[in-house]
Image 1: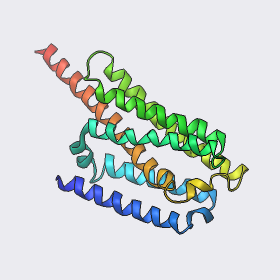
Image 2 (image 1 turned 180 degrees about the horizontal axis):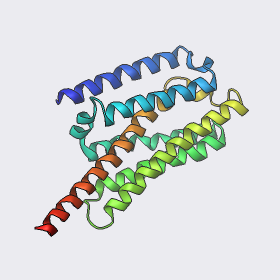
Image 3 (image 1 turned 60 degrees about the vertical axis):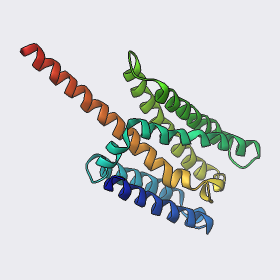
Length: 201
């Protein structure tokens, strides 16, 4: 296995264990809402920098676009949010926005995996990434808002195993979206450069 991929997987595994332990020990539930948002935002920023400008860019290159799309299939977990709302364990605002938003993102990832390129693929790919990022922002924003106006309403997301979604999966997914968009931008610039050189010749 590629060394950079191994390092990234080791980091993600250690991060997941730490978050899972904090959730299982009920430590996250006592964290102020502002601190939760700060942690998610900070983790997303640091991981994105490590991917775009740091040591983990080669790891995502090795995984490849299809592998990163496959990771997003895990967002089908949104159905769990919808089910938890029917059990009275999550607010409807969160299940409707984050739950169904994740389901749509997972379905879009599946369509792109099965789509072998061709006309319309690039615009669809860009749109999916933008909507996928919007879904994550809306989900985190809705959870943060509910934590303020309805203290305790999002307690389910602070406990194991669902604590892994906001504190682990969200930063990872956001960084993959940004990586894929940057990769596509570079490919477009390279293609334009080749076309310009061919025309000049």
